Length: 48
Image (cartoon, rainbow, N blue to C red; front, side, top):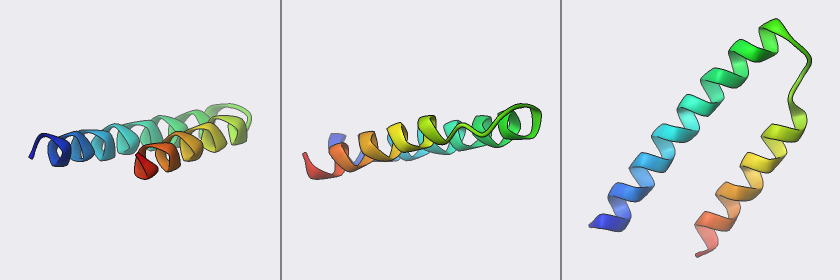
């Protein structure tokens, strides 16, 4: 149960992060590196 709540929190956090990325992409240069890092982090979390 706690694990499921953790996943929901992570998903929410990822959504917040994506929202920030969208805003920053509108203002500045693309953050491909940040996106790649987030993907790696999410993949690592899924594998655990």
